[in-house]
Image (cartoon, rainbow, N blue to C red; front, side):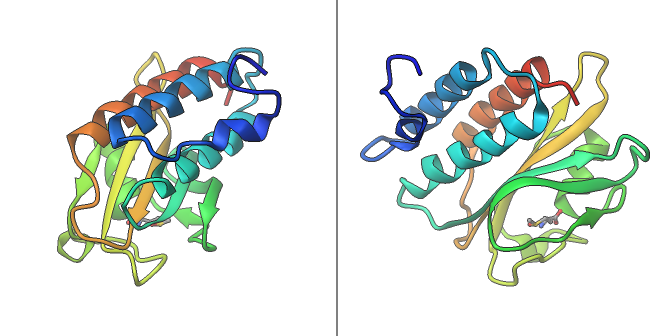
Length: 177
Ligand code: SME
């Protein structure tokens, strides 16, 4: 453990922070945890916990935070990875839903109202808005996506996009997939 405390669980303390501060702490915490670890399951398991605790500390009803990973044997399909929240769809076909769109276009998808996104996949019918950020390799290949869902409309904006894209970069640099 670094300066933040004696226990790994201390990394989950985000209470009282503004969104920008919470997301910056999330990035710093991920970087510290991944400094000596390159296993993607291990790093994304802790990253999903950090995402969950950071977002749940805000006045925002986030109901799902986690990852879909490009299958090594079939890059066209995304497979459910580490996450926090309710049980979710296990596979997502190429180009399907918000996750598939992010993987295919390699661009972050900020969706203020999922009902208006053609082909949105409703793993949870209560979800109202969503952000999906692609994780790209140095060669520009999509390794997977970060997906965060919210029970409110307009849950995510530029601050989330900026910090989550930074997290995607960090993940790409620190994980062996
Ligand atoms: N809504 C996503 C599917 C994943 S779940 O939200 C966890 C989509 O449309 O790709």
